[in-house]
Image (tube, rainbow, N blue to C red; front, side, top):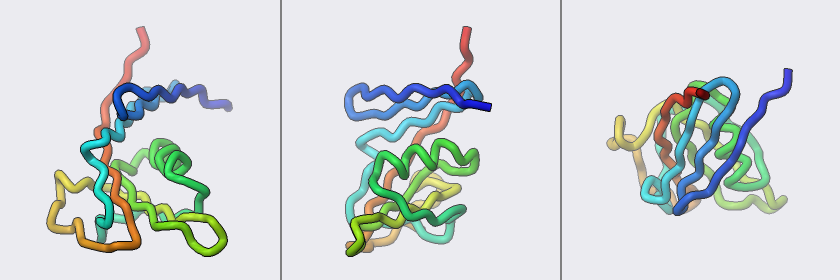
Length: 112
């Protein structure tokens, strides 16, 4: 089964739509440099960049935020998918100069 999706960029907000009805926003104001949300990881992946990490978060129904580590020597990044956001558990948002944190807003898209 193929999944159909669209990615739009509107005022620094990524919007993902799928035939499954999930809508995930990564607004610029939920981006924190040198921060990492801890104790909420659901997956740890090796990826090539932020766009791929955001897309992987979108594909995982439990993911609502992510941490991405600066490039490793081989040019890849570590992508940590989280099941919580800084808005829900801000005490778990820790300083870490190796990471960037990206929170999302989740909604449901109903095709009419």
